[in-house]
Image (cartoon, rainbow over the protein chains, first blue to last red):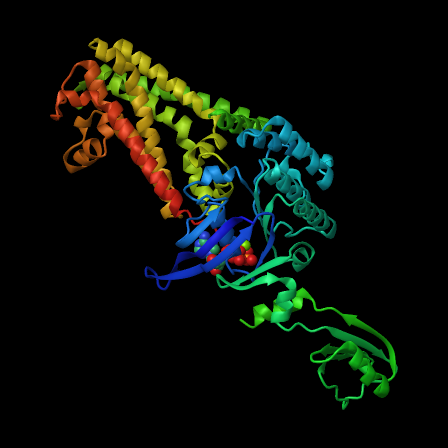
Length: 319
Length: 264
Ligand SMILES: Nc1ncnc2c1ncn2[C@@H]1O[C@H](COP(=O)(O)OP(=O)(O)OP(=O)(O)O)[C@@H](O)[C@H]1O
Ligand SMILES: [Mg+2]
């Protein structure tokens, strides 16, 4: 497996000035990215997450040649992004959820044909890729609409298409599902899953919607304050943060407050003591059930797998 | 090579003409203003016939070169002043992820046909100046007649670019760069003899503004510089223009590396 993206001790400092008086200003250095080591191999779909201001977008901007690093190294497709920016641009696709790559006043279809000339794509390749995107992303209904009149979800599908028409090796997505409704999110996710299954495009995905991560990414990199705090699978993250499965029980009589459950802890008591959520720590659901059956009047029960939101929330909160 | 840029340019013009009414109004308005400008220049030179030791038609020669060079540069790269908007809003991100030169894209994406009117006006002025001014014709003069306005264009283009790059270091630079470019244009339209002292030394010869119109006009008119620049210097505008373009390229490259995008 060859490394498509490689960073070592990558950092970016921003100097910001604070007004402290009428004329006096104070200089402060923000380390947006503070020594990131990352290797992404060909065909991988990497989830790159972190709380607001963690440095995700800044990392992506250094990888795409927008920002010069303050220190460390970065190489993408074997190129150094800033000095080799225009060569690199032919091999990567970029979607910034907050910002459009399309031409505001042109119909979507014209933006696409313009991109064919900008990237010098052979007409046949362009047509084939466009056809695929039109099918998978349902573009036909708004291909003739000027970009400024598109809804956010429609535009985002257009952006994804625009980023892929030149057949990039690497796709950088910065919050591509931000502000989308359930259906549009599903469309985007389905599209990315299909792209991933084909295996020839490496994808770096930044998002705050953890469902994106759960549905799409095997590997997850979490950064905070510009540093990598987790790099591994979602399961490894659960293990590292000792995520707990939960058992929710519905009762016929209120929960006896003095009940002791070894290896488990009561998290929540609701509905006047008739619904109780128990987190499993050092025991199994079976053992817990055995204990409960003898001491309370069970009506119903369900077992909940640990949620990625919980573990991420704990990860962010415990920093 | 240039094809993608031309496509961007055409797309931009098409986008512009979508707002047809305002486009037509602006075009009519700017043509009227241009016509008015030409009339003003002729009125000034028929009343005020000597300026800094030069006759009216000789001054017209200087004005003619600058009057072509500035709007031509403005037409080609003038919209690079929009860079500060791109830098402040972070829109430059989208420009930088495309496989084209950033400067080339900015120029093509904000190209404005309306500015062509002033180039026509400048050309007219220059042609009139060549006819009425006492030009001393020689093979060198013929070459310079073509090269002088082009060099002026390149020089002003360089000024536009350098001025725009200020935005990379100083985001709230506002109209500072404009003061410099438009000030430069007015400065070059006069014989350098009307200025004096350190001001003249710095701007005319130090920063090279004398090479835009004044010195090549002297060469065409067969006059030596009353201020004392050696005669061969009058023919050096093309070299100075190339040098200025090199400096501008350096500023641009350094500036791009200082681009910091925006936080969101
Ligand atoms: N152009 C800039 N100038 C100054 N500071 C900046 C700039 N861009 C980012 N920062 C700072 O760098 C840090 C990281 O920002 P970045 O945009 O990379 O975060 P992020 O992880 O993408 O956050 P979010 O999830 O909110 O998009 C923040 O503290 C931010 O304020
Ligand atoms: Mg971000």
